[in-house]
Length: 484
Image (cartoon, rainbow, N blue to C red; front, side):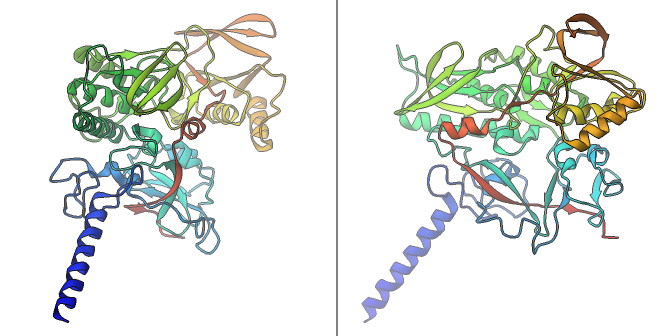
């Protein structure tokens, strides 16, 4: 009998140890870490709750907010039924106090600035989510009474691997758009790729034309991944469909902010406090120049196919093989371009957030959908701004009635000029060359806003086999004004 009890006790202890190990290390490729809040998702080491970095491996723990979030079981409690109506919540840990959300909110008083923090009056808030679209750092979510917000993201593990073995996703495409997070994620992913390469013994071999790594995108995440690959001596290529750091060029804000220094592989500390995006572009160019990072621009990736233990990466110019792939593309997709000379000038953007930054400027908005009309009307409300809306069609047939009404009011009030059956021929620093009803025209101009749609990235991800899930992300640091 004693032997039986001893055996049962041994089995019980063994089971407990196995369960503890599985929770600590995570299970399954692409399944996401199962580590508790007291353990580092990357190395499994314990840490003090609330710590900013893992004391063992030094990884920034903020990088795992979405990776650690549970997969949503259902939509129950998030539709506004039972848990309360939809309303906005500002994350105090992410808000940078820019005030863009206040200007974007259609409900007077629902959002206001309290010091350097935006706060929500839940009585006045109607859950329009315009503030969510406007916030440049993803600090606002619309939810019900639950202190979580639901996001649709690729399923990633603690190394930012997807459900496709060997394929990684970092940066904005993974759900978080902050520059510092994107830089950290790019480095973490490539560190893991290198550790696997060394473990498999598949380093460079004579006559072997297979790359160790292909990186798609040259924004903060792609740049960091490329620099880490360079530092580790990997054979890599960074592919960018536009110009170098195209995501920064398309950034819809005039100002960018890194609230604290972040370490960029090879280059060192990067800290940009309240600078223009042109300044950030200068830094990006300096990084490439001083490090020797190779970036192949003007190369669009059209397909990625896994073949055994490697990938065939297909572009619009050629195909090649790579053992690992890191996708560092933008979450908003690829905006459609005009295809005209001068489109790469810094004054051309594909989204707009800071309406007030265009006060007193001459702005051309291109497009015939709701996004173009909303941008034009919002700009027309800025003091001293001269706005022209240009569209190739004969009428705005795809625009919502309320937006069309606002557009007509702005046009009737001489605050906005509309040019139909017109297009852009060339963009120059101080002017734009147009074709209006078959006739050329020169428009004095300071800024061009292109709102003609884009190609979303998720259909591409699903086509290559990446699993997309919905997750309930806890909202720390919730701040809102008391009702009433």
